[in-house]
Length: 315
Image (cartoon, rainbow, N blue to C red; front, side):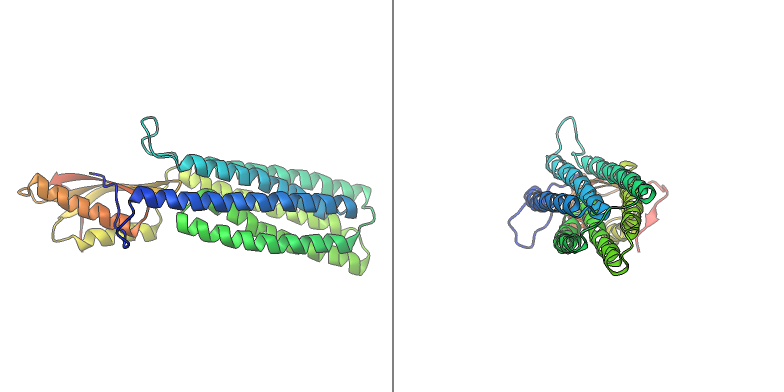
């Protein structure tokens, strides 16, 4: 008995309209991040070539992976925002897990390229480096990434988007990377030892590999239909407990997430003498209460008469 609307304190917007508004904002944030990434890529690539710093060039490569990942995130958000249809009755949210996997793959490949170039310079030696211009470029990149990571992380939490969450994590790593490169170039300037430049690039590659592993882990949770987090399961149980005078108990509670949509289904046990209309109304109220606690939830309830079956009692 799925309900298609959730309560709204303003009393005017349906569940579908609210979902569309959130999706539009998410796409705008992703698009803005993409524009910033293109600008930073051009800056780092130009400065890396001028300064001849492998660390700065490595960060340019990472910006290239950001560009690919950001494009994948933007496309996936557009697809995920499409409503469920006959061929995709559960919606298109799983595409966000695909986007996160693409981002992880690109990050891993970028780290491999950086490792190759850094090792080559360690073996062959590093040329003279223009440290000052390299540091200036990385400071600009760090500030831009801090701003975009903050905006994207905030929107990811609001919308529950896995694609935005993966990209915000990647942008946060960019801030750390920029700090490491600034430190490495500063050591080159202070000591005159060019070895710190490729060493910094290797540390950057290792950090990218760790980030890629983290993104893959998050994507796999969605692909494997992992249950909702404990806090959200507790919220569902609290809603059911609030209706304990109307429901005898429940069993077969199953939950999963597909993109921003939570899928929840359960069997509720009612007294045998309740009417179909009465049970239907109670189920609708429970569905609406769950959706109020967990936005973008699709709730399916199967009503059962009390026949002594096993159940979780409501407290």
